[in-house]
Image: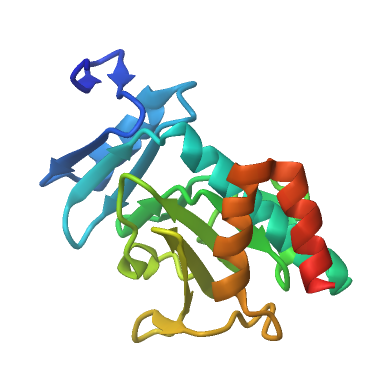
Length: 213
């Protein structure tokens, strides 16, 4: 398997690779974002507390799980009669603090504040209401989002959904989503993610919609 490559012109990782660059600055992070160019599949994170840049290349399964999770959220929002705006991919940054690229994010209560915008600037725009991360080969910690501060964070890992609510003191893991408090998502999400792999995405979506109706 080829080794990861970073040059002046190339950032190349194999699917499933993760590369950590230590003792890096915000300027290093911004330069890598520029040099990535059209390789939108690569995810790049920066944390000023650890001074680390993490570059990840997701596996194909990762994309399917993300799409299913996002589709399930859209089904739940439609059933509640709620409007939303969603983004994927997107780069969220707090200058000189954190930069991260969630697998998917939703604006629900704050939808109108970002409507029609091609770029989200967290210096003036609100953070997402809901962020989704799927971990297969890399690990997402709630602290990775502390400076970004989405009000709710979902991390799907090893067939389990972890739900976190934001507070200035840190993210707290909770049993239920504030957006869908009546749903047992810890049971529903893993069950229908697996159905997506057994029977296909459309079947899983249809069955999920029936289950939450």
